[in-house]
Image 1 (tube, rainbow, N blue to C red):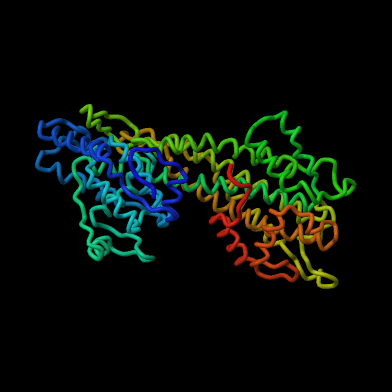
Image 2 (cartoon, one colour):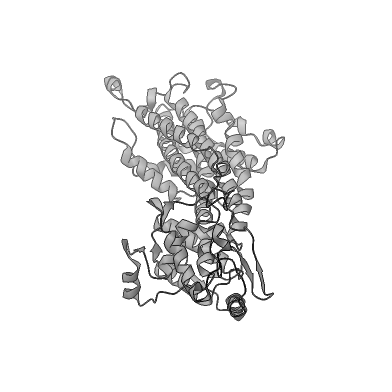
Length: 511
């Protein structure tokens, strides 16, 4: 059970919630409940005293100079989520929406948003019943937070718009009625508290981080298999060699490769003294991501466990603090960085695959890794088209690496005149991950074929493969047989992508 209070959550917590691996609950601790109540009680006190509070007794954004008549203050939150109902594009998947809700609830539970305990309970109901708001991907500039996409969360809490429920998209009001859930009416400041924050980009960043972490390991395993297939030089990953350039992530990748290649080396006279860079420098490429991940984790988890709306409400000290914590610059940087390192993994695998396919570079493997024999070799083309597809996916991934965070656009009457673009960066990163997982699926099938061809040529022995490599080949072969005669491989590639995204194969243990 993951309990929401002010205790810091991890990326893994958000991923577990998103994948429905762990249930959630709100803390019932008296101290936590009191801290939440203090914020909303303080706002009630200010309203009675006619205090001026941005977004409570004033309009929003550039309209902060507009004073709201006291009798209209209760209507303001509904107007906020209503006029932001203009999102377009594809819809976030239910998995991604769970991550978004968990990220928003984490921020609200810090106790500085001025929300009521009843609002937090409504978030809990959505997560516990798996009622997920249907949220369009597009429409956020990443400051004032994820206003437009989070308006769909606010509306659903109030019984409006649509939700994913039990595999269908249905009107929220209909699902609430069926389950006996009462819609809430947002109190002053609660519309801002839900919408004026970084939950969409942060939730997506948590999911992206987990996928990238797995891809580092998978790319390392495929590199080891490619090295076996094209008679690579395992001494490129020597421990002493890497001790003189001590980046810890890079050293870790080299150690993983040594673990996979400690047996089954081809004879020395059958290979180049130095492999081409896509093999020899693989720890240096993958290691960049491995060394970036701890830093990126810090940025993402700090954002996840922060109060990131505006204004900040200090209920116990009775302060209203106007600022800009909705600005998603740290997530924007994290996602722009991560999409760069992930795209480099795609490029590395694409180059490795090109070597395996080409008889000028693959040291005796058949062209295109075809397993056809005799006269049938003439009409079989093996992985030729898959390699073309791999180049296409890689090129698109590389194209997506232009940083979104530098494309700030002044908007909203020049009130939001410097914005983070963090949500666009996170969406870009997820696209790069999808493309790189497709590249990895192709490279994995090809490297399995390459290793098996070496075994059939009696230049490798199945018994001398490391247990981990032997195991992953066996698992791949359970749904993708050795390619002897040409066949359409799209279904097998899709199966492999799904296996990657669900982390089917254990890789190198815990980091």
